[in-house]
Amino acid sequence: DIVMTQSPDSLAVSLGERATINCKSSQSLFYDYIKKNYFAWYQLKPRQPPKVLFYWGSTRASGVPDRFRASGSGTDFTLTITSLQAEDVAVYYCQQLHATPYTFGQGTKVEI
Amino acid sequence: QVQLQESGPGLVKPSQTLSLTCTVSGVSISGGDFYWTWVRQPAGKGLEWLGRVYPTGTDYNAFFRSRLTMSLHTSTNEFSLKLTSVSAADTAVYYCTREAVTKNWFDPWGQGTLVIVSS
Image (cartoon, rainbow over all chains, first blue to last red; front, side):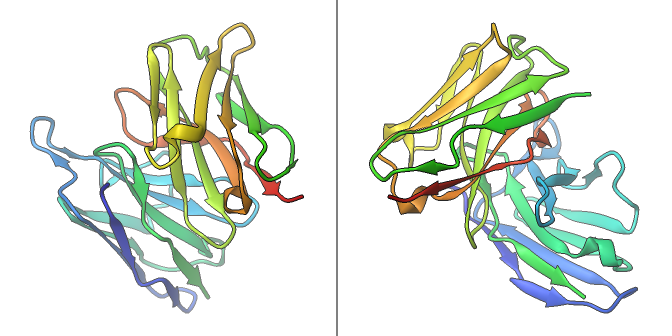
């Protein structure tokens, strides 16, 4: 199985400051023939279902504020919240969809 | 607008079978465009992909394969999950979701349903 490792496990950021989450995959998630990474980021808030933020590595999902940025390719990916807002308090998960069983990172809890 | 909603018992006894249904609205599950998927989150832990069902078959997480059955019910536009021989380790919030065959992310998700395994 592909192992996804997120860092840090948690971070506390002041309102308006930057939050950065890293995710490393045990193997490349890049499909050369279609030039895409089979990788996604999700946001999970209490009592709500997960919400996709980015897919194919860095394609922003509909309705996601542009303060959320995603980058990376292959085995190393980053999610950045450029100016943290109160409503961004959540647990963030990375996910590989390169091969089944699809696997998630352990989650990163973002707090104020 | 596509919506998914999980339903089923919130309490299951150890060694028994956990059965959940996901009701889908806004799209037909009988088309071949989507994988219908189950994910769970044990308390205090991360997300686990259990598997997916689609008109031509199923793919299961090997860790659960011997205990897991997923089915499509096209007459009611629902899909289901059965997990046998449950233990406390199967206590979790169970989500149903969808993955487009030509795209690779999960959206939308059901609200999730908490299943507790306890005598």
